[in-house]
Image 1 (cartoon, helix red, strand yellow):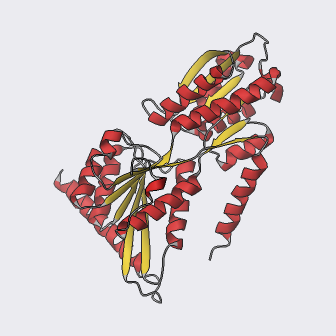
Image 2 (cartoon, rainbow, N blue to C red; image 1 turned 30 degrees about the vertical axis):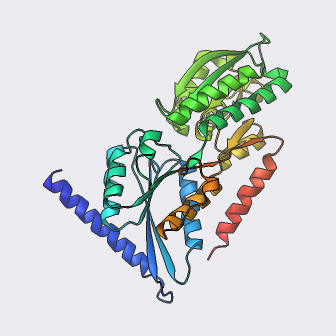
Image 3 (tube, rainbow, N blue to C red; image 1 turned 180 degrees about the vertical axis):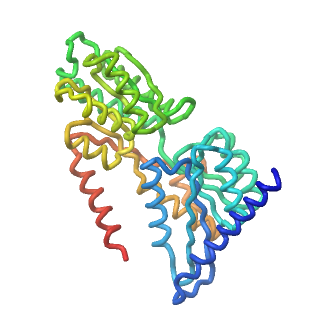
Length: 358
């Protein structure tokens, strides 16, 4: 590391430390016996699902404060660069962080973060992007909070198969096969691999005959997915009968492409996503998407907050809720036209609750 880089890192560490201290002194009426400093580092600032989960985590941690315990949460992002994320983690450790919550840029490259945390005896809760098992099991203070990507792929395949089998008009050319395209998250990402594999396998298992037109990587991003779909529409036109997407952001990109191209609704394909984002739920209600798989960010944020405080206090975790003592998996839920109002109402109640907070 150059002298300039060391100076920059030292300055950022000082700024983070000052931020911790200022935040910790905001309420003079509260006398605390101890302060917990929690550092949250995401892979990007541009992922609506991760942003919503992070907001929920901060809210949960705030609610866990007592007269004797104050919790200071600092959130940064790695800007899609693992080296930048590593440096942010190092800066947080230098600033006195007690627990780290890390949403990895590259799930296969947590080694430096683990090494730094282990050296300072700091617990790390990885979330949403699951590290390789060998990495997670190399030290007892490493944990993972997320969902089983295989389950989401299976569920997406199930709701798509149920819809297609009960709506013969999906097969617009009546050739007995469903021509489909698939929007993938990113190359080599385990969630993308599992969701892609199991959604397609499950459709075929449920007697849906498929013909692949194209698989396109869109990096989990709505804008990139819209661009990919524009090209696919130009190439295949109304031949596309089904769009499977590894997440809702990309599914919404497909929706936007079809909105702009000017096709009447009967010429649209059926579109399925994963995550249960509010915009996707609205699209399901409007009939622009036919379903999504709800990724329970509320449950995951709640568990992450609870684990962070419990482990800081040196208490034992509830082993019944953990797999292999290290993994917490939240359950996915199917969302389609039959239960969309239930999930939209839950989103409204969550938003109303936040608006009522002082």
